[in-house]
Each structure stands twice: as structure tokens, then as C-alpha cells.
Length: 144
Image 1 (cartoon, rainbow, N blue to C red):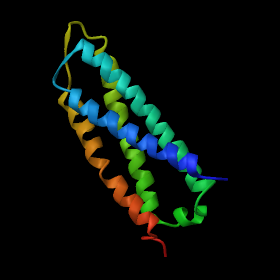
Image 2 (cartoon, rainbow, N blue to C red; image 1 turned 135 degrees about the horizontal axis):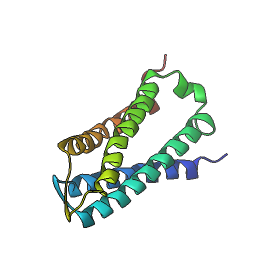
Image 3 (cartoon, rainbow, N blue to C red; image 1 turned 180 degrees about the horizontal axis):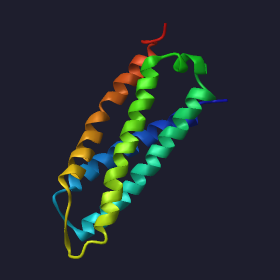
Image 4 (cartoon, helix red, strand yellow; image 1 turned 180 degrees about the vertical axis):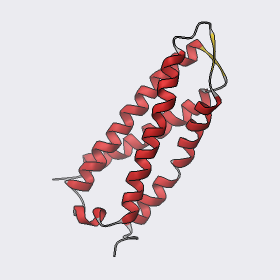
């Protein structure tokens, strides 16, 4: 099976997720106009969709196409990359739920918890690690 479309979907997902996270971080502030909340919730949905595309394409690349699954399965750096993906995914749930709850707050200017801002900034900072792990894994670093 040709892996071109799967790799393309994986890269598009990565770029889309990164773009959504950057824009979310630019829009988020302690005082949030209700109109910006709607925009942030839309961006958050696209962010989640991009994460699902990344995960689906990544699993296909690991298990179905490209290098043999053992190339990745035996590599601790690959497991670190999967674990980090899981950590970032779990971290993103808290801001999503918090933003959904903000919709129920009265008023045109909503107060965003500082923890939401910190989590979204940390998610963005952790994205820097993924390309490094990907390059090291592709070079075979970590394989015995």
C-alpha cells in the first residue's frame, strides 16, 4: 500500500493542530469577550479533529504502511512520543471543558482562569519536542 496519502494526512494534521493551538494562544486572555469564546470553541473543535487525524494516520504509519511495526515498537523514543501525545491530549481536555462551561457565565466579558492560559501555553511549548523525537526515531536512534 502506498503511504503517500497517509503521510500527507499526518503532516496536514500536524500543521492544522499547530495552527489552531497558536491561534488559541493568541486569542486567549483573562478577560474574554463572548464573541471570542465562540471563536475559541470552534478552534478547539478543529484542534480536536486535527489530533484525531494525527492519531489515525500515525497508527496507520506504525501498524500498516512504511517501516515494519517492530522498527517503532522496539524504540523507547517512539513510546516517549506516544506518551507525550497522550499527555498533551489529556491536558487539552481541561481547557476544553472550562471553555464550554464559560458559555454558561452571564455577561459579554468572561473571566478565564489563569490555569487555562498556563495549560494552553504548556501544550504549545510541548509541541517543540515532537519534531525532535520524530527525527531521532526516523534516524533509528533508540533502536538496539
